[in-house]
Image (cartoon, rainbow, N blue to C red; front, side, top):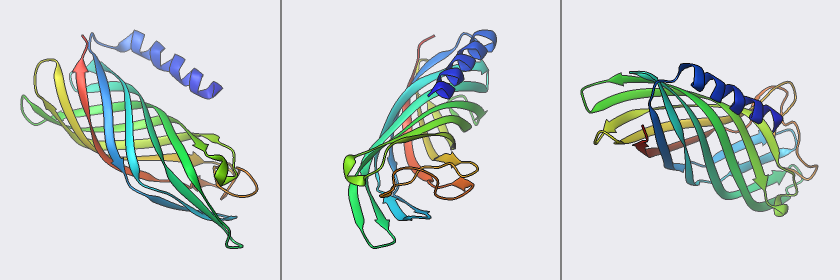
Length: 203
């Protein structure tokens, strides 16, 4: 978590140096699709569910902004070991991300947007899964459209991908041996969701 704290400090230092007087409160809600994954110890699945979250957007220019966001999914999960033992439980999937957003105005009210998100993902599995939680570097992205319904209020609809990243033998897995590396490099979990955010401009 030290990396996450350093990440937040750097973020607010950048905002203080470059942000324009635009701060917007973000509220997220969406549907996350189920995701299967493989490890060297077996395979598993994180089920679908409702994802919620919130954050702040800081305007850097007319069409550019940075965001600090948190998103959470609590859902069912299972893990199958190679000896055919299935473990069922629940898992909390959390992301704290710094997003770099670019808007493309279509008219006075509607803009397309794209966001690149970098940060941390951490997992809180229930005891039935017989594994500990893990925290990993994560990346993600969103594509969507923003509708400015009034001077203060806007609505965004988006498609989003979030993934905790596994580098050089580090990663998260469910299994009887605890948490650890599933593959040597790459990502073990890719989570896709469709959702939106209702936003209120604070200043």
